[in-house]
Image (tube, rainbow, N blue to C red):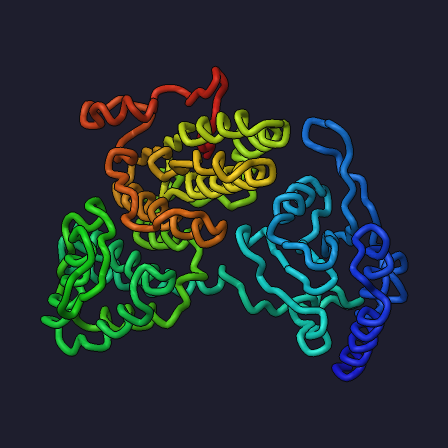
Length: 482
């Protein structure tokens, strides 16, 4: 059976190489039919797939056409050869959202050279895998759902699996620490360690820096000195000029304002060493929510309704309140002046989540606003002169986002989520921003009850407008619904 699959897919690749030039409109349907044949079907129609399926646009404003829909398995969107598939992620996501009932499990973007495979139920931001067409005969695992008897796909870039495993190590370490040291100290230590692990794999610290520090910890005193020293260096403005922490840059004066020093005992050091084995550049911000869940008593979670909303459900709010209205404004803009006005407005748009938990709702809102900002950049570059592009100063920042939660740990996790979001957005969108120092969000996130005014919330609570829906141009912007 394996040999037959490989042979069929080799035939498909050979046919594609000889017959396909990569014209989106003229060759997509022929290409897709042969793709289904390569996976063992008599053809895509015989398999039950639909070409050019009608999809009603938001608010019934016209009709769009998805290139191929095979429910309940896959939606495929084709683009011309050489096209940057990342630019078409949003279109595919919009189509997928409206394909109910029987919404496909997977979404595939293809430009005749490679397949980008998405599973939006588990991972919204990145493809779970990418497969070059010439590799398909030996790497069909990520597209296993295309066979007549679908195979469970095997993905090489499944961030959810990495996230859960990495979160488990930190959650165990936190729970152990909380049993023997003050809980606020354990909390600070884990949060600072979390940022350090991220920083090592996303280029904010030298690669393997944290890993090497943990290997040097031979005694509880070593962990107190070395890890505490790292957090101290991350809290010192400028780069460390010398010593063990030479080159460590300043992160911020919020999270690291009190560097956490703890003597690690028992299995705590090993749990952190295990955590370094993961590629933290692939760890999704939901890791913070997992730590939050694991650190809260189950009865307490039920009492306060503490659970984490999926990306799909969050986009049901962020999509119509932020993404779609702003995308329409950007698409309708016809001049540099108008685009600059929109960009200025976007940098003053603020979003509140009055029950923010670990900040996942705000993280997704931030990510979408950065993508909108990037699209403004692209529109400006299309029609601007060099002098006009020099007017582009300032960026959408995490300081435009506010959160309240009754759980103090949730608030601290939310701040870390939003700090990390900046670097992830810069890398994804190639924004010309400096990633450090991280934003200080101490005034943006407050521990308290959003339904009952507390004097302890002070002026910052008023700044958050926590007593009423947030308005922009007289219209509600976005609030988390739970």
